[in-house]
Image 1: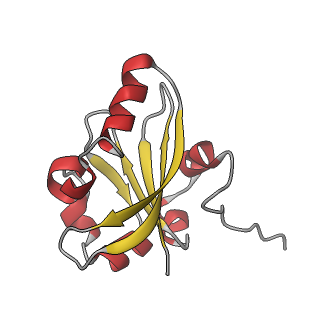
Image 2: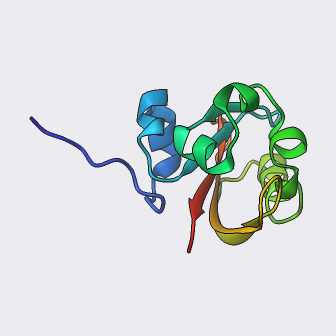
Length: 130
């Protein structure tokens, strides 16, 4: 039996890989995954992020990411990068150090922002750091 390794946070082709994963496969990842549509509504949310953030999937999916779920990301470092990429039709693949502050003590993380023209979902990936 051949087993494949789950994709890594820094995998170069991660955007296309995420699109092909089932919800169960997303739940097996060791980093947070938040997938949202062109209107900013969360459509995919994995178990790792649910547990780490303390927000259930049912509470998050169907809600606007940057105004309801994570308003601490509604700024030029995160939300604006997605808007800019969409406006000029360019791909987005940026990794930044960030501090999450909403509903929790400040938590240092690395965010990977992924988007491509025509892709059904954009992603914020969250890797918790020590």
